[in-house]
Image (cartoon, rainbow, N blue to C red):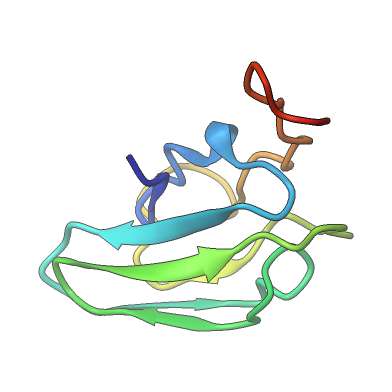
Length: 95
């Protein structure tokens, strides 16, 4: 199951790992623009259409900051994700 990060409050971002693919999820009726993501994503800006998802990728070596601009943010404080962690290998995988 893909990792979904909600554009309204960044819920789901605690699952992000360095180098992973995730999807910005916009369950609202309005298009959302995300900006200044270049410190942690391979792309700096995203447009997430209403009731849609947009694929994104965490950098292998993100430098932060982990905050960004978000026209659909509904939670208190500045839009931000949890700092990505290293992926934990599954049993049988090389680290």
